[in-house]
Image 1: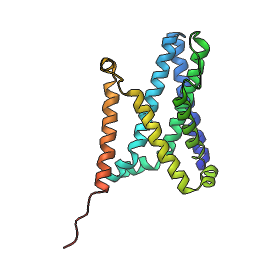
Image 2: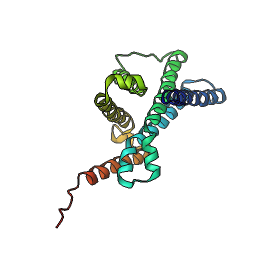
Image 3: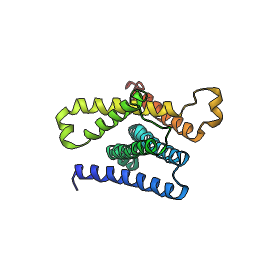
Image 4: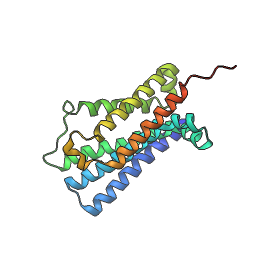
Length: 201
């Protein structure tokens, strides 16, 4: 299987699994605003876990340097493709909710951060294929995927953080704990990499 074929396979597998699991839940729970919201929340949480793993893949390899962390880093691009697939199914659920729920509507200008986020996600997905990656060059590819990773992570982080003290009771503490762990891992790797080396005697 070629690199491009693996990308397509992972992408459609992620879309399909998310869509099938959402359809199965909706067939059991019934189609309503709340049940669609459950599917949206679940797909968003799974996507966030995937982006967390991508976010810490290189720092983990820098800290531990094990075969497992090396394999994780090697497959980071495919994880990103899976993330794009989950987010594609998530976007389809958003449109489905707009169609099923009378009071729900989609306005691109009112959801500009979301629109930009999806543009970044799809730019990263397109340049995961061999020909677009070669077309933009190695330096531009690295810049796009590095900036894109931080941007998407930041957007997801903003959606998970409590906006006020009143929101603390509804905060997802396990998600916040994983965010904290991911940030600690990256900081540990950063300081380890930039630690002054002892001069030979």
